Image 1 (cartoon, rainbow, N blue to C red):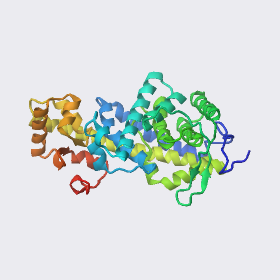
Image 2 (cartoon, rainbow, N blue to C red; image 1 turned 120 degrees about the vertical axis):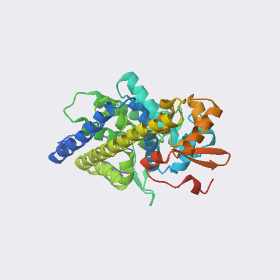
Image 3 (tube, rainbow, N blue to C red; image 1 turned 180 degrees about the vertical axis):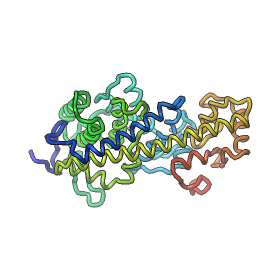
Length: 373
């Protein structure tokens, strides 16, 4: 059956598609992306306790990936909500809650991959459920269609029927685990398209698919940690992203799509390496300063916290278990007095802002300028 925008695409072909995928331009782009990715992987392997550096990186990815779906929050709002890990759900705005649930979904996916060693359709469902705070699984009701945001016209109708969707997810799972001569980066590009085309859930498909990208790279041992996230690149090139997806469906233009994803990997790997390198330098500098200023404090734990959370509160130190309230207040005041943190009052709360960490992930509206405070 020919593809029609207004008809459920139940005849979506399984992977891999026929024809030559690794064309000369694709092979060249694959080599460039692979080199950039290997350099990032190698640097991360040299770091002591590299998982500590994922906190701030993951928070920025959560914000960018959610923004692609028009779930927008300011950095100030997000960092305030994230300041107390076990209490963000109570006072956070709906967009901030969505973003922080995305970060939880990323962690869950990483944990599941560590347990099983393989991406499965169940992993995909569990990620979406965490992301959307739901027990729902794949779509059961008919009527799902993707619309042009400006005109309201139907641009794509994904496969319909629970059995059909589960069959296509199973076929995708088989493809991911089958022996193949295709480069893993090319396979990741195919994975991302196919998951988007299946569109298995009522909501959260795009964000789930972007989490699957990095988990697949880890599964293929191209990374040892889930540190490469493509959402920032996609956000900057959003129109090309959606246009390239549609071109595969409507015209079979795989080369342009694969090249887009390879460029996203190369660019993001280079950017992530620069950020992680700067983050590690900041971590070392922070440790040295904290050790000098707070001679009796748990220096390593406190300095690691400062490069994991852009905004700190007294309760942050309490909830992590570093120290009790009064001692936490004394530590933060000393650090603020010596310029390592900037203290800002928002309502009844005091936030201690690590401007160096905030600037690593882009400048944003200052907390003191936020109109809602």
